[in-house]
Amino acid sequence: MLPFIQKKLQDNRLVVDGALSPHGNARIKVEQDIAFLSDRIAAMQAHPRPNTMLIEHYQAMLKSRESVLKWLMDGCDDETSYLPGQRSA
Image (tube, rainbow, N blue to C red; front, side):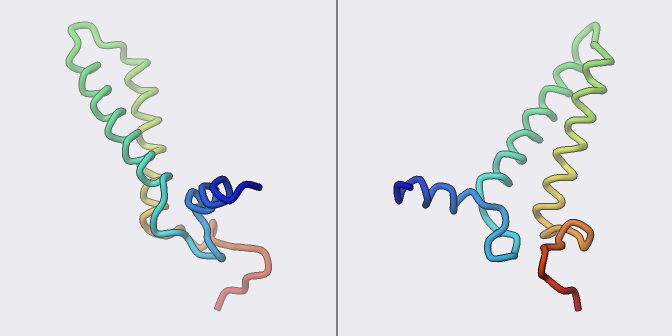
């Protein structure tokens, strides 16, 4: 594998040596998604004839992205942080 490709793959990993990486493109992407969805929902609600089904769909997507961001910021919970071969204290 070419060195620059390998470096790019390493930079985008969420888990590095068994620990959640504090940086990375995933957090930034999720934050951008949250900003987009929040703006889109607000614009749709301000429309004279809002499409409630689409707004509900976007709100569900927003809730999902917020959960992912919380997980990324918290480092993950005990249920999802298990790695094979790793023992809890």
